[in-house]
Amino acid sequence: MATVAETVNPRHLREKYKDWAGKRVTVGTSTLHYLCGTWKDLDGDQVVFQIGDHEMRVALAEIATVQDAPSWQSDFFK
Image (cartoon, rainbow, N blue to C red; front, side, top):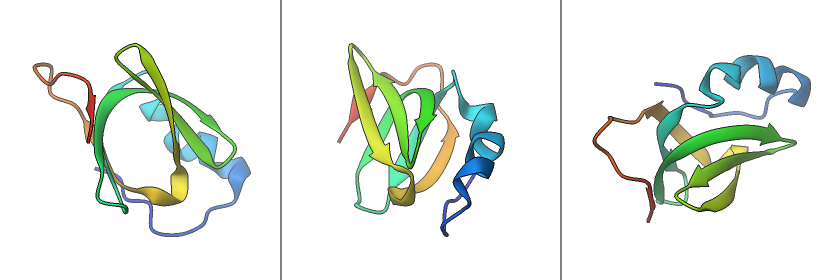
């Protein structure tokens, strides 16, 4: 599990989070939302997720937790 708790130099973000790219993850945000989808890319200070047929962007500063999604978990945002 990874936790984002501080502002990080943007050029180091790709290196820090590159292992999540392309993986199905479950994410908890600081705004009390949750999502399960594929972590597609890091675009500036936003993370791009594919949730079902929809692309969603979440500010990196709002991501509180990230973990691998179980294989049985469907994609969602709530």
